Length: 149
Image 1 (spheres, one colour):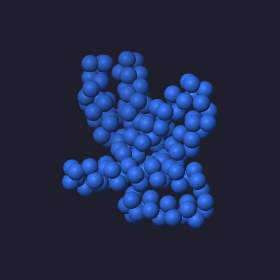
Image 2 (cartoon, rainbow, N blue to C red):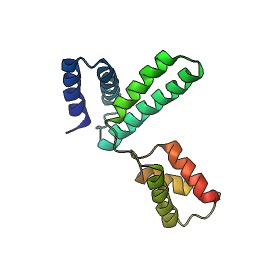
Image 3 (tube, rainbow, N blue to C red):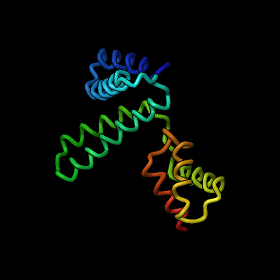
Image 4 (cartoon, helix red, strand yellow):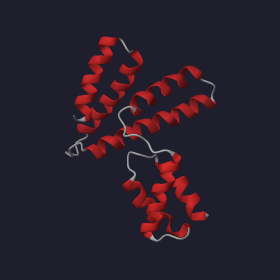
């Protein structure tokens, strides 16, 4: 089932259940999907693009959450937290820190990287292999840690 079909089905369920939090998050995803489909590029929505779109939505909300927490706006921060939880339901299972380190070590071995000079090579390959399963910041942090060790 495509993401769009899942979203439509889940939206109906959230409406029936009067789940305002879930409905708000699902509507945000549906709006982003609609914008991506009608952006004029003519590109078809692949699963990879859907995952990138969802990651972008989560990142936007995490950035907003950070700002709201710094400003002491707990009401707005709570809204962002709720939406992040809803959007993350549609993302593939995220890797734990240990799993991420193991995957990055494999990539470092494949590329033959030995120092921070090789970070770009490692990041490129790691980002492709771990797309959807790990955040770019997390990958970058692990790569830096392993290459500087």
